[in-house]
Image 1 (cartoon, rainbow, N blue to C red):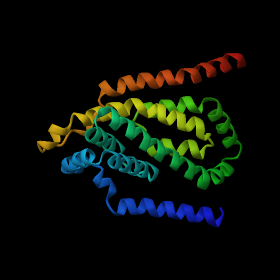
Image 2 (spheres, rainbow, N blue to C red):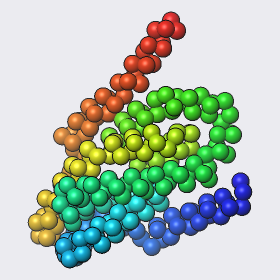
Image 3 (tube, rainbow, N blue to C red):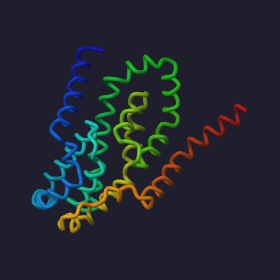
Image 4 (cartoon, helix red, strand yellow):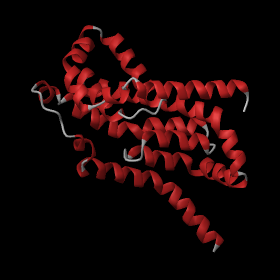
Length: 233
């Protein structure tokens, strides 16, 4: 690895360590959202464009540094900007952060990993070129697999940027719209001093439709595998 790549890797590791050391994950909690919700809403009303840009920047940084708390951030977007604008800003911020992390991981870590994997990496690359969009879209649609893992794995295994970005943007839209809609309705709950149950983000009523969409996204890949199996048999 070149000195420039080592420097970038050290810088990224330092930024992640600093985020955790300064308690950023604690600020992305339901309790923190309840504590600051009045200020956040007032800032969004007083400075709508500045608040929107700041929200996108914070969301992108959180995703790029793999800091947990994206669900709370999405809910905060709905709380601050309303369901539709909040969802749109969350999609932009999350997508930018995911693409930035993808590019960093591909630049810094993909080549050494692929050299270690050898021919296995080539087979993975071929599979991703053929079905990577469908697999990633399915994983994005169901917000159960850690977001940072779904960001890193395609980059390390050789997926191309365009299908990665397209699957990311399309895949996070449904859950983001739902989460932002939940956030838009939480103002009175938070103002009364109550902390919502985090389980509201992962109820069967939400997950089952998303799981159905994920299965639909997988159908083209499953069909190709079936045809290849029958042809080989």
